[in-house]
Image 1 (spheres, rainbow, N blue to C red):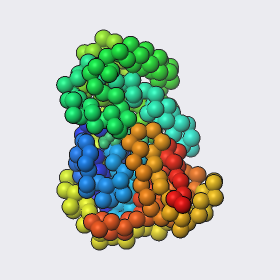
Image 2: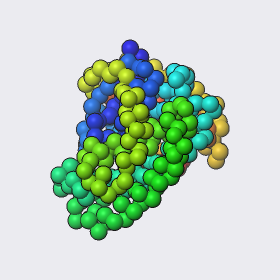
Image 3: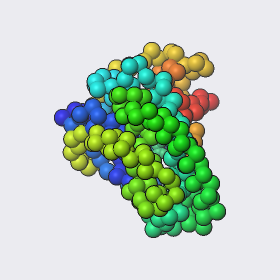
Image 4: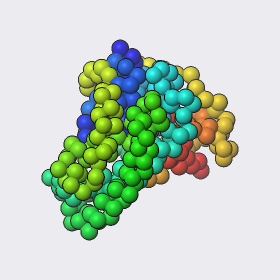
Amino acid sequence: MSDIILHHYPLSTFSEKARLALGLKGLSYRHVIVPVVSPKPDQVALTGGYRRAPVMQIGADIYCDTHLILRKLEELVPTPSLFPNGSEGEATALSWWAERYVFMPALGFIANVNSDLYPDDFAAERKDFGYLLGKKEVAPLFNRYVQQFVGHTVWLKSILADGRPYMLGDDISAADLAAYPSIWFLRKWGPAEAQQWLDIASLLPWVGRVAAVGYGNPTEINAEVALEVARSSTPAMLSIDPDRDPTGLKAGMKVTVTPDDVGRDPVVGMLLGADNQEVIIQRTDPRAGTVNIHFPRVGYDVVEVP
Ligand SMILES: N[C@@H](CCC(=O)N[C@@H](CS)C(=O)NCC(=O)O)C(=O)O
């Protein structure tokens, strides 16, 4: 059993990516099912306010966002690699495309064809988060979602058209784990409609190969246990050179770290270090103790608090 604790919930597509990454690495790990909507008091005690799913905890180190979670997993367990044959740039850039452009049309499509999944109170909560999911709001956007999804997935099909098993060739990579969850979500919550509108049939052999990776060996624990693990642990030594921030932010400054897309809840803490790929802040919480919270650089605004 590794020291990894995954905080996630079953419906979450980004959590699906993290579960598969843990599966690819063949890891045994503990996991906490977090609430699907805010408030999430146990999660934010660990993260200082970051409410998105998933989050990975190792002792008193908290890793927010799948981009950083995958990088950390790769560092911990290099093989099988999430970035085979030096493909970190390609795999990460393709992941960004899949997550920023394929995911929203898939989500909006399901909001149209399976509105039972999003009751009014859930849709209202997600509107504050940054997603439009209410039946009346998404109905006029249905054609746009179909057009965008079909248009973007032409490129996924083109990538796979030469018969390669995975997006980058013979080996699975982070790109597959990022592109797969939108299609997993569509097939789970609107299979007939996805088949009718979205032309995904030719992707199914690839979908099957990615799904076969599985989730590793998870053991469920409750949030109190995870908080106790954080409280009783000391954060790990910094794994980055602390003074590599491209804009000159310095260790010791008070900063906010805020997602730049949805769920823009700022996390306030003391900057421990930043380079061009990672930002680490420290904060102390009555329930979690002193924790180091790690964010990827891209996708987050880091601002000094005067
Ligand atoms: N860039 C983030 C995105 C995470 C994200 O948006 N997760 C969704 C769930 S799939 C979320 O947090 N939704 C709101 C919530 O769960 O409270 C990542 O890669 O982890």
